Amino acid sequence: MSHIHINLDHVTFSYGKGQPVLNDLCLSAAEHDSIGIIGANGVGKSTLLKLLVGLELPDQGEIRIEEIPLKKQTLQKIREKIGYVFQDSESQLFMTTVEEDVAFAPRNYGLPEEEVSRRVDAALKRVHIEHLKGKSIYRLSGGEKKLVSIATILSMTPDIILMDEPSVALDPQNRRNLIHIIREFEHLKMIASHDLDFIWDTCERTILMNDGRIVWDGPTEEIMRNEKLLTENGLELPLSLSRR
Amino acid sequence: MNQAIRELQSLESLSKEDRWVNNLHPLVKLFVTALFLVLTVSFDKYNLAGLLSMAVYPLVTFTIADLSFADALKRLRYVLPIVCVVGIFNPFFDRDIVMQVGSLAVSGGVLSMLTLMGKAILTVLAGYLLIATTSMERICLGLRMLHVPSLLVTEILLIYRYLTVLLKETRRVTNSYALRAPGQKGIHISAWGSLAGLLLLRSMDRAERLYESMQIRGFHGEFYTGRQESMKKADWIYLAVWTAVLCALRFLPLTAVLGGWIA
Ligand SMILES: Nc1ncnc2c1ncn2[C@@H]1O[C@H](COP(=O)(O)OP(=O)(O)OP(=O)(O)O)[C@@H](O)[C@H]1O
Ligand SMILES: [Mg+2]
Image (cartoon, rainbow over all chains, first blue to last red; front, side):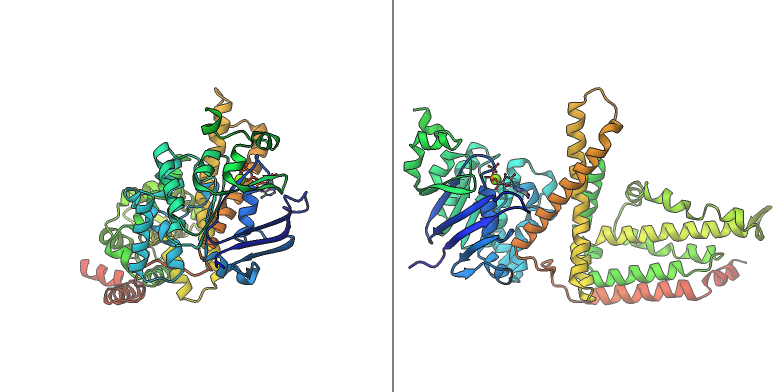
């Protein structure tokens, strides 16, 4: 049995007193899973990822990460294992320079300074943005911000990565590079995206959401060819297929 | 707006440059700044000459920190006039003549006005020097070392970050307004209410996400700057010299002594 996994048991969640955004969700993911989360705008993909890092807590049901129940008391421990890339990378970066932002997490973990700078260099190298190291966050382009925010989580060396729309704003070359990075990452990863081709390239398993529920869960290959299911849920065939 | 953001950024990058004043221990700089403020403010309201001698601190610090005084004045151009207004009514209340400069009779009011202005300007300059040579994170670190509660220090840091967020959001909102209302000067008064409300909501939202981003990357109210933060010899010397100089300027009758020499 593998270690690193996620378990959601009948999770229901709503913002404030409104309609539930996630409705009685059950899901389990194992160590080497690569999971794409797809669905139309507003179906609750980002919300699901936020719950997994404890930025929101479920109203009902339980979330377990590596057998640890996600609660206020266990948040710190759980968050050290998870790297989460925000949908909006503007909000993810807050230090003055790229270097400091990427070093933020390892420093918070109290690592010695040589190790911090080693990790910073490695993370920057991995996303091919060594040249941005000393640059001010304020002066980055949209895509560069995205790459930096990916580097900020790679420097945490997480066990699990969660990414919300990682391919948005990337040029073709950086997009391809990101696909490589994600494929190389050997542990559990979950990626929410509208970019079905990207999901296809990075994830073996796909979850289709609609209205706060999981409508379909299975091999990516299968769902990507199921035009009926996709259109019923407000999506379209991946470009690479529909062109053929 | 753009300019405000840029200036905030450039001030911040200034504080991160590798100059020896920047590298001094944050506690030392906090202490010297605090001491300077207390001593400056404590001058008698007619003691303009004594007060002026305190200008040694900003003058010397600007020089040794290799900061541009002109830039500082430019950045403080909105603040300085405001603080200068503080004593403006004193001349009307206090008309006794206390001093004769040549044929000009100086009333107590004028003198106390000048003193008050001097105090305000020196205070602002000292604050500027602290910020320009010490990054916010290191100031926060210094405060934590003084056992200021971490909640309060986090709050200070977040307010500081929030300022940037607010400025950026403001720019975005005004830009998108301007693009959809071409040919209009400024923002029509009818839109102020909704824009201000929107701005508040959006910037709060953004600030919250920033805080979330800090949290999920292991922030728990402690600050790590990645430097060796123990007091070094240079720190002790800096501390000792300024404490001695500032106290001497404040408590020894230096101006009288100097005046005696000249006379
Ligand atoms: N902070 C919030 N407060 C209240 N409602 C929210 C909040 N964030 C999201 N929602 C609502 O929750 C629902 C799900 O939002 P979520 O962001 O999870 O969707 P999504 O699937 O990520 O959409 P997208 O594809 O557009 O990113 C939406 O109806 C949205 O309006
Ligand atoms: Mg989303």
